[in-house]
Length: 245
Image 1 (cartoon, rainbow, N blue to C red):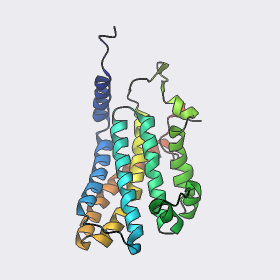
Image 2: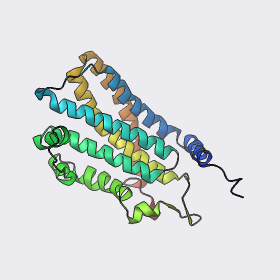
Image 3: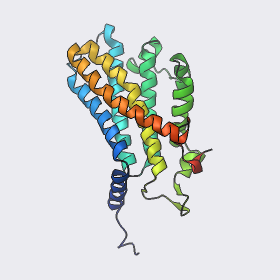
Image 4: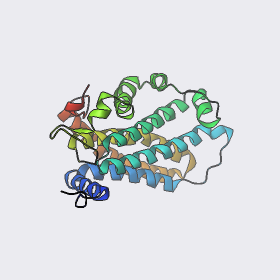
């Protein structure tokens, strides 16, 4: 095939998107529903005025917004075959969750996030502080970091092992897509309580209750999917065997 006949990048991305849509209707439905829950929550919010007494809620609002945007962009990216890049975006979302958890315990985190104190946040220490070092930090965060930083794994996903060719252009990969789904779904579930806490303090309590009931069903469906993947792939989750260190 000559260069003139080669499909454009947009056409290749569209092909990957079509393959993803056909093969992963359930996963995409779960993720889109979870993302819609966040949109529904944001739509219920009233105006917000920052005071000294509600700085934690303000931090939650900012972290919820950043987490949602990172997850949404990760979805769009992994949909068209850029899995390593999606993992990097999801790492930001994990940091958002760690910061949101720590805001309740550590004034230093609020200082770093809202008052430009030039304080360096140590995610390992924060994970320890919020009792999430083993699962969230040693598990999800370090796994995602291996895609974010130059590593054996971040470079290995650029090679198609079946044909021994570089993935310069986007290409569909089932295991990598499912691994992205796992990371996104877990973070979406983790962040949901902060949306409920914010709505409970800031919006009509009845509306917050309705939002909670709607999102509980979606989280249950997402949790069922996660348990199925764990049963299939093991407790360490979905990790491409040819990419494991």
